[in-house]
Figure 1 (cartoon, rainbow, N blue to C red):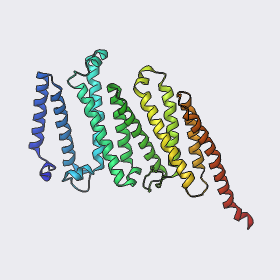
Figure 2 (cartoon, rainbow, N blue to C red):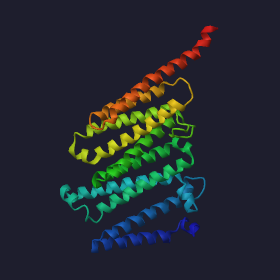
Figure 3 (tube, one colour):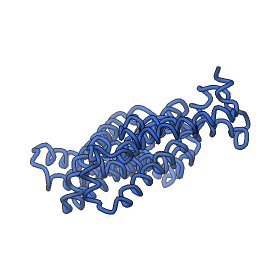
Figure 4 (cartoon, one colour):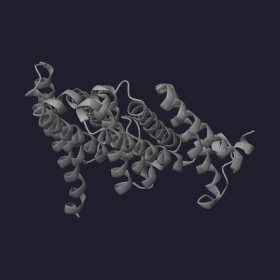
Length: 325
């Protein structure tokens, strides 16, 4: 069954096109969003099948089954590009109406604008999940260019589409995908042949923890900038603050475990992690009433001194034998 489905078939393609035309006409007649969702779903199915049919042109083998298709890294890129294309189509329809305020008010009842946004969200989620699943099975893939591009595109798709939908969870997901993409980019630049890991007891490098803490500082700064715009504050301030706390908490947990249980070797990156976290806690202290942030800032500042002292001591102990000789 799968072999027949993944073999080029003109009659099947014409059947899908005919079904799309029928659903478009039915949607124009009955004005039901169900027809739009079915039309978009069949359109996506046709594009995915066409992608599988032309696979021999860019792959060393032909895709003949669903597992092979799901394991194809290019499928995530296809989903991400499709999601962005649907968002652009929705924006074009909004501009075509001429009255943007009226289009926003009629968004929930619109025949195509809302379905286009929701299907774009689904495609972005599929693209990100497929790449994350592939990297989970083979962490070395994280250093590849294609997974990084797909995550950035999926993140952009979620953030742009959610600018109309206004769901904080989607904004948070888009921000976290951007963070993972930046971490993968850093791994590709400095550790290209090493399996990516950011577990406290894993093989994560201290410069990766430093990148994570700097991202938390950057997002906290961005949250302060966003808070000056009422429209952007409503959409992004809560997701940004949630993401910053998650990143800083994970960076603090991992760096403390590495500092306490890690091998005794000179590492100034670890001091940089604690310094960045100190800056982060001082930033969020200005906009938060939680009494724990001053204590965390004091803890990380103390860890800066201890880790710097340990790094200098380790450097001095390595140079001491040379002086004796």
